[in-house]
Length: 394
Figure 1: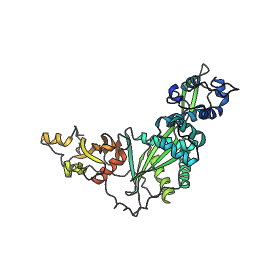
Figure 2: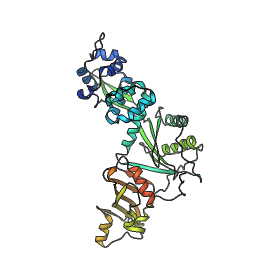
Figure 3: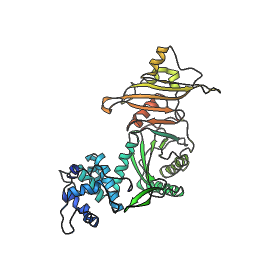
Figure 4: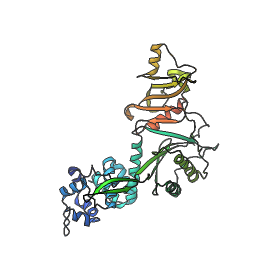
């Protein structure tokens, strides 16, 4: 982070001007020696040179303290992404006083100064939503028990133990310690956002005009989504390591459910594309799916067994219309490999969403909230294999 990060949001003179001296001065004073050396604030005065500060933040020097760089990173990221309601909630929780006319830049900085770990957790939450803005592959692991326990948000002690065990695992993989876990509860799921270190890296750099090597450990974020009614744990891990996913299954099962064998350890068959062949266009009827108005099959790939490696791909605004125009159907002997569906939500949820399924257990989403709405659609339409009756709400 300290190697490549340059503040973009708070370095803007216009936005930096949103932070009044009464808020900014205590922060700068914590690093007075640095900001005095950079001529941002005179040693014997509380005056702040905002223009000079903007230049310093826009081009961090080699002598900038590492902790200051970390503070700037979280302040900058959250000030750009956050909603004031989220920062108000943190302020209330941690006893931080906000003035009625506080700006979002001031709020983010105050939380960073008074409750730094809380701001890091909020950043992790925003980052997790960002994980789903780009295409991500989730692989699923299912519970081994017959009777699924009712979901309760885990206590912080359980999360700390999970983090500690994952710390030990990452240390054994030469990725260091420092795991942090945040939980977001959704209507039908719980998101576990895991921040951890990656493999140590080194880069060529220039320091004081001389070539040198810089060593650092990059951050990585993984997203684990648990569906309590199905007993399913869907995992996106940035490194795409099967051993890492197995460690998540082991330690999450142990510390959330008291059973380190609660989840399967092998990639499980989750999806079936057979509803497309059995029911055709009606398999995409979403009139009974809350939040969705329309679903279209836009991509379909299948192959035929044998030594000829014969495969067929259909891509269209509506594949079923294309097949009808050709007087064709999905062949009985074909092995369905991949389908792409465009989902049109209710107007309140925004524009079209795209999801792809690769049999037997890979899903790829395009947008932030696709995991929730797509999972609901896929489960109701029979594209998710039924492993047990779902847990009924009490």
